[in-house]
Length: 332
Ligand code: TXA
Ligand code: MG
Image (tube, rainbow, N blue to C red; front, side):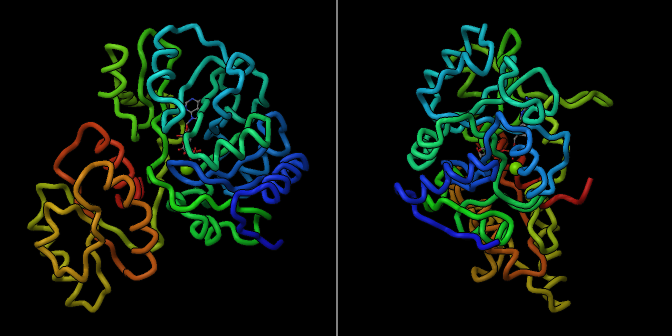
């Protein structure tokens, strides 16, 4: 199969729609990462997504819709605070998990009675979703467990020969996947941290918790249990208070002749040679925007990436650290 990368215009959108109607999957840009979308109402189309990605069959997908889509047709929304969250943050990088009306096929949410719905703000994503005029189930457009794609080229590296079309909407500005927030309970619970932080949600509705599975409990966001987002080279993660160990490890690896790079923020980069830095930048949103781009770059040039966690842990940084540790920690 030849994989085409096309700018978003009438011709590529018509081709995308034709492919979706044939039950095929199409890659498209969002403001977070690129998605691999298919018709959420068709079991065969959704099954294709799992097959293309090699995704575990118990990890549910998010349904993507344009901003005027009739949400009522997909989910039961009986929590007044959920409307406040939509008004404050959508379209944007916040996915809400509702009670499902079961109008999309059950494979989308792996048989759960909930459905995750996202309204991306990326203009190309909105055009695609409006043109397609159907609910689009879409995970990130990478092979399962690899780093999520933040450019059309990243999608091509993973899915060349496996899909026909990648809609190119440029580099994703957000850089990490959307916040996933359960709105079925009395107050919102963040299942996956991201660019809309728990603090931002609490500011709007008064209360928000970040979900932490108890020992032995069945996880509420199944995707979170897998090692994820990993580059192809070796990695090692250091806490922000383990700088001595990071410097020592860097020296030892260099002496052994390894090509070693350090993924870190501005706060510690002066401890390492400047040509060996994968620079995450200063602010938490800058770090989110740079993280996957740098992991993609790093895996091409490094034998080992040493990653140093930023010291700040809350806000958007919770999402950055979550992805960094899933990419760079040992297999669990
Ligand atoms: O930014 C994003 O969310 C990107 C772009 C493409 O929109 N998509 C994305 O999808 O990250 P994916 O499949 O890589 O991650 C979906 C996450 C997983 O952690 C999954 O477990 C969770 O959403 N999820 C989906 N449906 C759920 C549900 N019904 N209940 C709880 N968690 C759910
Ligand atoms: Mg993913």
